[in-house]
Image (cartoon, rainbow, N blue to C red; front, side, top):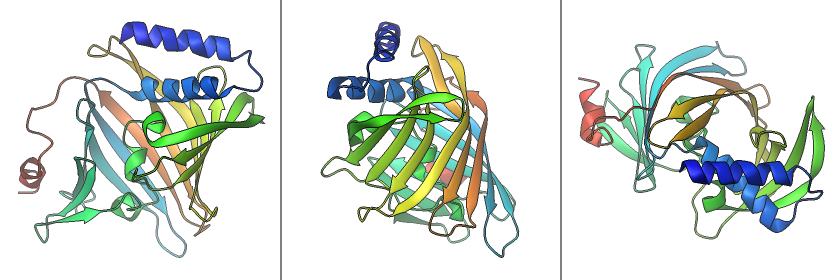
Length: 256
């Protein structure tokens, strides 16, 4: 994995001189985005979610996010406030399930599911899978504040289930990090705009290289204009997790 990371970094440095990007170069940029966020092992972080909605009091939630790269598993377990504690989401075999301890029931959800009623989606907490799920095209270059960016449009591949079938990405040419992301419905309607004001890195023993993750994500609902969510990821830990953690029984046990 370390060798792969070095190759990708080398590709990124070379691409900085290419204007516009050729199709093969766009593919490399997208692979870099995915690889930088992939741990090749386990992942645990503490997430804070602040939700603003029109004519409603702002709300705050706390959750623990667990991931396992080997089989693409994901769990989100809410711990605060008290009324949300024990609720969670589990991604198994590419299916997303939600659990409510007050009823003891599991329900299958779509990728469009608003996580805990916020403007966030499952993909905001998961590893990047752009190369696997989308076909990407170079759309041009643009300044985003002080950053030189490539604009890349990504359209979902046939048979893949995602929250939004069309994406537009503003990618920092210097680092390969996504700085801005817009998500569209199949009709072309803009649904969400996301900004990534900070990226952080942590060395991964399992990967043999650094893993990058967004320190903060600012999500703006483009349908309900007054609604927005801020996600802050803290206390990221890449040590191995319990073997049986990604099970319905394990999540249920946390609400007893």
